[in-house]
Length: 566
Image (cartoon, rainbow, N blue to C red; front, side, top):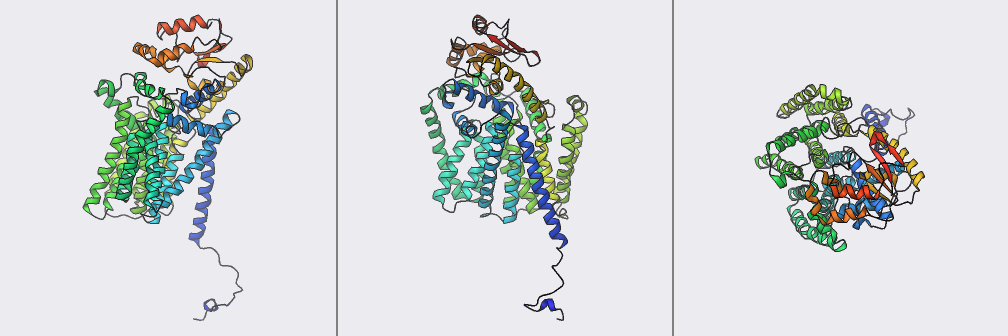
């Protein structure tokens, strides 16, 4: 050798070497990822919470100011979920927008911790590259969850399922892993009960990776789940009654009346909407094929479609049982699809599937962000484009070999595909339930309704007890106390659909709230709680107590009136 660079200890005077092109690209990619992450967190904090989560938080807040604890307040959710959200809510303070931003930030921090824990656990059983890919995809799917999914019981159940899987894998000692993972798995069930199929997902993954850990975790969960329910009933005896009466609030479900052809059509429509609005759900078959074709033996090749199909079927069963066809009932699918997609690209990267994810990640938010009339007029074209792209990616995934995607292209495509629901202009659904609700629209409505309710609060006094005859987000934004454990009068409102609810004990308790002598005003939503449509006994009680014909304040656009006590 003649170069002095090869001589140990020799110092060159040529100055530091220029960074290699690959190093510059890696640094630029990391910087772009950090900036994109910060932008995503800022957008999430600005967008706030969905109306259903506000319903739960608002109910617990106003009933809490009236003397009822979270355990004694009915907000259409089980005790475990009420306690979890109440605990999170107590860590925030300030105006509504600030509290929602803090809630988002807290969940981001907790999710980052759980994902890091999951990565550590997976790295004990999988190659580090695969563990990194799966954990990153799962974390992004949780944080970029559709606005309607975020913090719903189904989303919380998925979050707990990820934590259960991490707890089952990360600790080296089985005596630590199984009890913690089993307890977390029981919480997956207890946050809504219909989330039982979601609890099978971490148990299935544990069983595949370590059968001993999976078996012991399942045994602990089988004991902890009924024990947790018994504890809830011991803490709040009404929990047993509410558990039995909940089905009365949702009549005409397949569980009660059997499965009909109309239900199958709604099932296909709901799943199709989910696949369109979450591109990786639509590309889930592609991920399964890539994993099966990269499997080491025939048994493993068949295991991928069978186990994945069982997991998806469980989620769909929970959707059908509830029979309401809300998109958030499928909250487990985007996270499951993201996990399998990340693993597939780490094991068998292909340019075709990556290009499909990249195209859908750009095209879907552009189409979904248009007005509802435009979406309706171009519905066939949008679904056709999605179908062609998904079919092409599926066909490409069957190729035995192919060139891997350009470096960072797979990561970029995955992020774009997962970020579709997080765009401020993305609606809750493309053209089905709440297809006009977007983060922009929800924030605008919150600001308008919040300003009007601020004026109402200033007029009647912030501590004046009221009776709420409106959906829970009204109480969430007004904040005046109510002396009623049913802050949103679900049992009264549902009599507009089913008069048999009047036989329920909770209906009688709810009706007694109307006669509360401390309530000086009633806040009535004439669209959600139309007096001519509810049970005559309910309408008579409201009219006898409150003068809604001469309200002290009204917001006609949102059908709200504030009725003084007679």
